Length: 624
Image: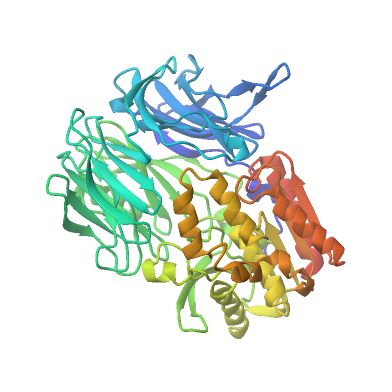
């Protein structure tokens, strides 16, 4: 078996992540550790030397001094100035900041904790202004809903804003054309979604399309280079999401540009200079970049040939296209950043994301599939401990959160941590997971704790039947919806599991629906979707209570580890505390971890390390 590595190896912050090249190609900006926090570092590509541009600190509320906060994301505005968002307490993203590349003129453009302002269009980065979506302030740390945003023009040195477009009513998101004109909005009211459009900045708004919340509508993605054609995502007459061209003058779908018969198209890439469509991105068993432009395809092929065995993702390029940043990663490494010189096709390694993580010490994540009891094909991933026989091993069943997301082939610190401890890890994209088409998604509707859980259970039985898992040493672990599934597994199939871990897990389904409605900016749609996908609070009251872990604590036979953040806006801490009280009342063996400075999951480095140390102890004690 492999050497047992320290918990910190897996859960300390990476040295560099989210690296992007400057428009002139001379510098790289990246998120990098600043002690236990995360700052914004600038790398001189000629000297390969990093300097700090921003280590943001904000005034303490109600007391003197400052506290440091994390940079969560950023973008180059131009060669000299960057814009970035920050987060605190592990989740509370808010406040828009700007700083010069040399660290000067640091400015809070939007007050900290105000997440209501989002960048819409950089306007080419050639002036002191950008376009933002901005709504009246609401106290988002309390989870309150936000109003519908207007569009404003913002000065990137002062934060001063002037109204650009007034929300005509119920628009939840905007889209600009390539001249920086706000041309498209998506409006949501009650059951109806409406796509509005105007031909010019002075033209009146008109409706392009309108559809009921449960109809297959279209989602505008971007304008084509002609500023008349829209790229839209929609099902059309098929089961998977495809990319279409839409004529805004004729108000009609035109050509199908791309579709995969098994999985949904996920995103697109446009050329920065010409705005033409150059690529479509999707995910089968592994990430796939489908380049429709031959130049981009040739560059991708050159990188793939030089770096076989890894997924090589194009991040961004210099303004003249002479330099392109690629990030490589695999199931066994968070990867590295490379600089491609396009004139010579020379590939230059810049740095690893994390030097402490060695690929040879990590385990292989293999795509697998099995059939559920009703015949549905379930895709997933199996990770065997390095150097193991692959037979009769202790198993960690790891259902994902969401549930309307999916697990992917990537470097997963959690999975690698478990494998390093000698456990085989099984992840499955149960019905209701996204990315596999409409039918598979809707097969999970109203199946929380039922057929969705059966898919998980059938995966466990598959691993046992294959001789991979020791049936006497199986644990179930998950976060958010996965935490819910862990609790349901312990209650509805107690014979399978020796222990379980629920991390920010849902315990009371009706309460979750009610709290989601309260914080939503368009409650009616949330209510309608929840009624269809999970269950109606009135009509399906019995069903929702039946699948709520809070109501079946008496069935739990194995030890349980619970973990929650007090500031969680998605799964209220009250859900974890309520379950803990019931576990204690019924004399069940459990532990509860609560972090007062975390939200939905633990994000601060020190809290992550502490949590996974406890997980390590818990599993070793219960999977002997």
